[in-house]
Image (cartoon, rainbow, N blue to C red; front, side, top):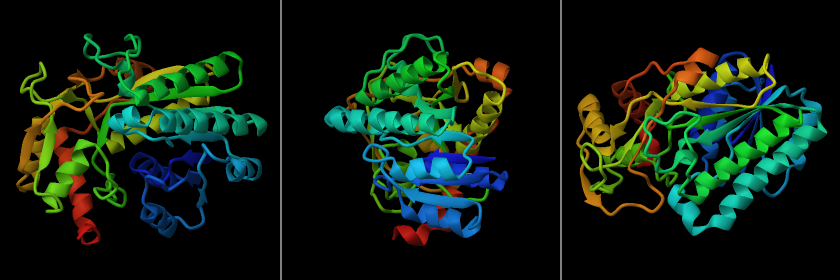
Length: 336
């Protein structure tokens, strides 16, 4: 089976691409490389030179090369990871996020329609739930995004729902919680040098002595220790959810949404202390003000994914922290 993967140089997209190639898929990957490292593309190409093709293109600006790839490569499905994803940045630059995330998706969907390709898996986010008082959140929980980024995800989900009703696409939206860790081959990981606002790469930067300490944004939330609580999921579990969703699209014409998480909430302090313990490293941190767009707590009810897809997260927080550090250590010379 040949698939098109957008955002294939990012942490999640590159991990999925690598695992898909291991599983025997042929992959055409697309990325603008605006927010990603081309080294990930080189790693993938080195290991799969005959089964991986890369296209450098910004979907929000042009889809000419993607259109050509869709015409000439017998693509059966699209896995759509591409998009900007920093919550606080989206509040500062809303036009950029709307044009990139929504505009880029519209351009992609137009190219799919022109070439008769219907199957698409969309990388959505738990941010669509916003500051929900109902925890854990399930797929029927009211959507209350509190950021521009979250609003773009809801809009794309609604667009896919509308197109499915018209039989234009067969779509699944996967609402990710917080992916961390690295796949067992340790080739792809969340790069601490890319400027991510995510917690784990900031912890890694301190472990690598690139930063003296990290700032914990918000210590007065109504949570167990005052810091924000999230549902962290191992990247391998997340990727396996995508393969289950691909199988689902082979026999279903409905638009469906699935949470992909563990069903447990971990605080920022939980993550830091577990990382320190498992990897025997010291992580200094300080408490600072809340960030705009952040919510106190958000974790998943994943019963629907278990029932419909036969999927369940299997890896624990200790494994997430250990796999993260083991992968980075193998390439630590790149971060000096």
